[in-house]
Amino acid sequence: MSRLLSYALAGAMLALPAAAQQQQWFVPGQGQQQGQQQQQQRPPQGQQQRPPQAQAQRPAPTPPPLPPGQSPPAPVIAIVDVPEIQRVSTAFTQVREAIEQRRARLNDDLQREQQRWRDEQQRLANERAGLTPEQLRTRERDLQDRITDSQRVLRDRARDVEQLAQTSLREIEQALGIVIRQVATSRNVNIVLPRPLVIFNEPQFDLTEEVAAQLNRMLPSVTLPPEAGAEQPARPAQQQPQQRQQQGQQQRRN
Image 1 (cartoon, one colour):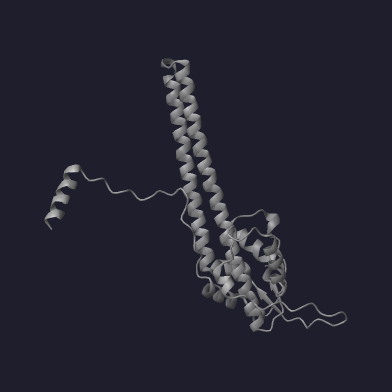
Image 2: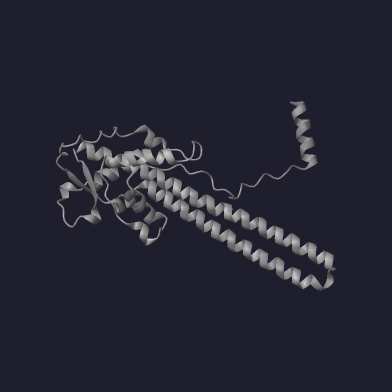
């Protein structure tokens, strides 16, 4: 996959540093070679998986290199505006909003935990005079253990949110690369350039609208796992012994 797609998508959803926002060329044929090299370097299956949508619509194999002395084909160039595709992509919008919501909930939980720690510390300070040294050490150790456990849980949740953002971004990136190749092939285009690199072009060279429409058909949404640490639905209240006994008697009659 061309690094252009990674930088352009990550810049909008993950707010990467400005140095990572450099625009690069996307040339159909190079993306698959880079993707194969990256796939060989990735961890074993189970840690990273390719999206099923991308697997179902793989591009045609890349032609072999030209023999020595043979001229390359005449360039047929098209333009694609990746930020515009992001703006109208239903999958990208869904993932961005979900990540923002999870980050906001994580921040709210962090604020509540910090306030709880301050309250516990203040309570311990108020009761310090009436505690023996051993009791004081025990209370302080228990409080520190609770703070450490809470911090670990919050760090794990933050790490999960960022990993989810990267995984979802990679899925959209792979799908977008496939769509660009498919649209370019259907138009006999052999070079695709990002719009910011082009000073002037006729509208007929722009494939943005067609690529965006096909991407929404191919990947309308991304399946996101449940949020770790999210509140679970409340369990129903336990029945009173008398109610259970009455129900048991009624069932025996029936």
